[in-house]
Length: 231
Length: 299
Image (cartoon, chains in turn cyan, purple):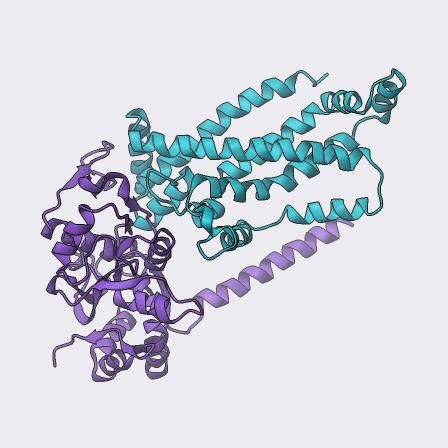
């Protein structure tokens, strides 16, 4: 049992020393998660709006499919993207496999359904009077959408938080599409998996602590954006 | 209503647990073995272990990982026996009292593989020269980087080739126990040295993808080259050198260290592997028509 205690102490020392390798790993994790969340957000929030605000045939079906995609395993996404971007795949010539871009592509697929469905949920809880009032006051459809997003921002920010949490903690896609190359595509989670495989737990524990600390501070920031709608 | 469903849930959980208990703690003899990915990926164990079970009734649960992790499993008493290939660390394992004894089982050899057009021009050179040429070229080199036996061998060869390994230690010393998270790499290669920290199969597909050089054990290479619908797009460019030998040893975990391990059954497995039958099975095992492992037990 005391290996956990030893690892914990060493982990704190490691964090304290701000080791360069550690910083590279952490910054790559943050960069990749940031871009995948950003792009998925830019695509997912308008998509959720479009689905919720329009009535069309098969709407329930679309929502059911999106809900199903929430349980898409990372391994399946990894395989799917791999088959396209590997040297023998359709997009092989672009040399995307084992680059941070490949991880971002996979992660976008992972969280796009999360952001879209949670946006739909957030919007569907709104009182329909917001929309009607905006329209009677002469707002065009873009302005109406903005009013609605503003009112639903608590839920939409929650969607972003959830998506970010999912990608920064995710290991399957990063491992399969990034390849865990030291200094290039090694992220916090793949590094943790590796150190565990090597039988060395210190770095794993250190990275685990760091990951939670980073998530905590990011959530404080998000909380600031969310907090003002509480009333 | 709620009470009833809670009751059903509790019953279900209890049933589940008792099933688990039967599966784990049943009377059947099962031993746990940690081994390297190369014995597992090459398919050798699938040929050996069913025969062993037939002969003795003992089942073997296999955990395939890098040699570093396999040895760690032994040190923590998580397994009954280890089957690995890293002589220096095996000896240390026994010296420190974790292993009961070591038996030489077999060997195979390492090969240097790379792209067909061989940009570094290593074909025909001995392995030290080949590594030197890779270092002085523009080619990428993929390293296992996972503390496995193959990784140890690779570092050894860089040394023989006279390429200096830069060592970077991470300062996380606590109470005299230095955690082994330093990192060694051939400084000349810099960005061209890609350390991926994964198994042999992954290193091969990575090297194929990047058309890079890597050090592989012959068994896994053959399996990936001839065992798949689309064979690996890499060629053996350097082989047969004395420095490329790869001996495997089997070590039962010392029962004095961990009294609850199944030493007797592990002992039988070790003895069986070096028996005439075990050795013949190893010699007869072929990967796509090619012998991959050579028995080592002394008569």
